[in-house]
Length: 283
Image (cartoon, rainbow, N blue to C red; front, top):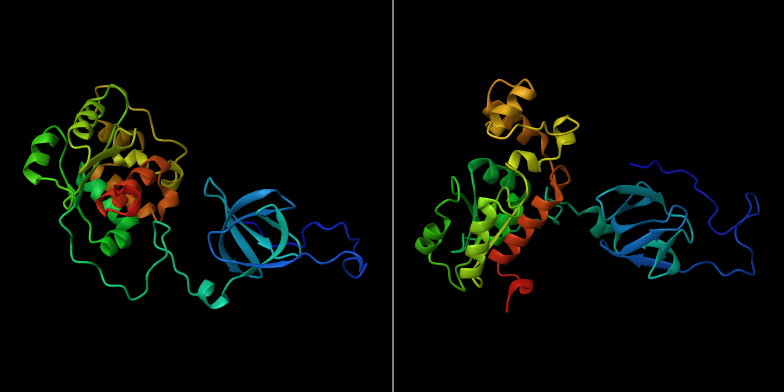
């Protein structure tokens, strides 16, 4: 995270001159809410306002990078206008708490009674990882996550479930790449149950691989030869005795969505929106 410094003189005023020239009007002060797009003029860093603290404002860029900047007069652009930033309501900003998924935590809100719709995942590790990141969101929406232990019989399982406009089903699958078994099954299911079922996924062989390697202290996931058990190969390459030990290490390393690859984040959040029947997915 950037350390707050004096920074450059954004308005071209010499040090010791006593501020801006009397002939130059000061830039307007703009009170902004969290989520406002802003540009730091000196560095051209673009991002959304996510916090006001330590005498500065913290911006989050499109790649998830976060930087803290001093609140200098005229130090920012909002809608292409030069402004001095201030929080809209200091009290509201100070009290904001975010969940591991990045959502604003809703203080005092009880979990909803589980709705009929469901979110299915391939295995127990998928379910545990989703709970770790999106557990608060799922409870707010009343969404239950259920592991499938594979998707070979997915169509039959969906027929048994009986999806409808009030009983939606989201399915998260691994290895969703063109030509794979998972891709063929997902394409068929999405075509047949286009209104009430949505299958999305990630390109990774296993949900382990959807955790960023740097989060668990390695530079990259080892490449495992075709035909070899992927999880056992990973354990051998990283000198871990058993897969359950490796999974315990992986899960303990994940603290927020920033530790997860973007393809998993995008798929899970789209499935939660679909199952919760948010306006963006309604007819």
